[in-house]
Image 1 (tube, rainbow, N blue to C red):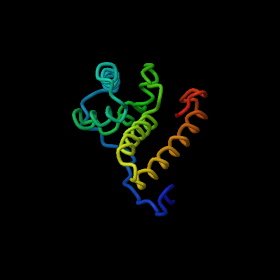
Image 2 (tube, rainbow, N blue to C red):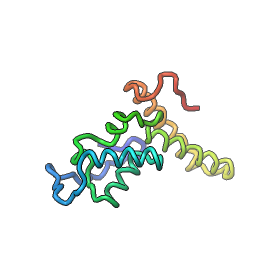
Image 3 (cartoon, rainbow, N blue to C red):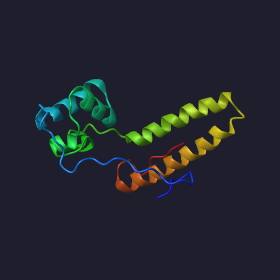
Length: 142
């Protein structure tokens, strides 16, 4: 399948094993859930940051394999879900930094096009999240 803005095909990625080997994981499912809740409440970490911390410091390769549910589901159960999804928030922050760059560099046409592409991604994601009920129907990107 081709990429959306580049006219090239994507590279295939690696796949996870069918049944992960969890023999080296010392934490139980409840302990992992408590750790996730603690990371969100105390350090205000995002779900991707939590996954990286669990992988690197606590040797948990997959939260879904250990707990039977994803980090997002755990956050939703404990009412710790953010109002704007993480990927949409990252795109909005990228737009702000790119607009700041373009205000200093008026003739940077490559990044001007990049800004248009990012804004179109934001519009598509907004449409998707509104249809899924993840963000409010009256939410707008300005």
